[in-house]
Amino acid sequence: MTLQERMDGEGGSDPLRQAVKGAVAALAQAAIDISDLTCRGALAGITGQAQGRNTDGDVQKDLDVRADQIIRDALGKLPIAALASEEMEALDILNPGAPICVAFDPLDGSSNINTNMSVGTIFSIMPTPSDVNAAFRQAGSAQLAAGFVVYGPQTSLVLTLGQGVDIFTLDRVDRVFKLTGSAVKIPAEATEFAINASNRRHWDLPVRAYIDECLAGADGAGGKNYNMRWIGSLVAEAFRILIRGGIFLYPGDARDGYEEGRLRLVYEAHPMAFIVEQAGGGASTGRKRVLDLVPGSLHQRVPLIMGSIKNVQRLEHLHTVPDGALEANAPLFGNRGLFRV
Ligand SMILES: O=P(O)(O)OC[C@H]1O[C@](O)(COP(=O)(O)O)[C@@H](O)[C@@H]1O
Ligand SMILES: [Mg+2]
Ligand SMILES: [Mg+2]
Image (cartoon, rainbow, N blue to C red; front, side):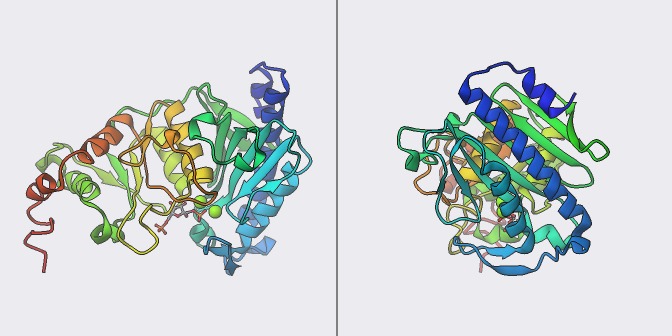
């Protein structure tokens, strides 16, 4: 079954539903073009070299810029009130009377482009509020649809329209996405974690305590051995979690500018949280459910902890434990620990 056939089978012929399906179809078409570019790499002029910086201060690679243009061209002619992209400073108001607004990260995992590792695209579809300027200042729970694409060995599109999660695989022969997984469910608990461990000394105590528990394995409080993965592409980590569970963390930390982590709420954390919850998992800052958050600004960052529900709940629990008790349980690594100079 193709993506189009799957969406046609969803029913709903009202203008809102039609606009959502039209936007998803256009995003899928754009993803096929971006997939072609990632596969051809240097042959298509993709070097992964920095071109400059976007308005948020992030280094912009050539594929960031081209993917952004491809998606904006694909969505530009549709009944969409406003667009927001990681690569644009402000939202772009197209047709204020249209029923939906689309936010996207055109190319996620840019640091992986020239190393031939998986990168992706993330999108979130919101209803248009009465003031279109507030399109992306709505709670994540207002999302109508969300999805992401992984440009890996296979190009996969993960989609939720609010009734479960489907996975589609790009058939390169027919140039369409075909359904390869429906009603995807994340295992409730799993023993795999993903975090950029080079930042360990900057983490706050609950995150350190959790990762120390994982590292202690069968000898620690959790009583289980864990495996670790870190790809550096949110899309690839999210896909792995959908397939076999586990937990992903990009917490806030003590580095300048990382107080709220690295990931952006509107076009990274909100759509991922919607997908993960629709697959039975959890998405939290450690203290709050991500889908309850209302963005204060378009490029706002947010700590993101997502994956198997029991793993996420364990982290949320550790955020309720007083720091003193966490330190006492971590004699080797805590602030007053043996390794502290
Ligand atoms: O290099 P770090 O700090 O580990 O950050 C990696 C994270 O940054 C991201 O690449 C951010 O996304 P962009 O590439 O879209 O800026 C995530 O995909 C990934 O999880
Ligand atoms: Mg990103
Ligand atoms: Mg990006």
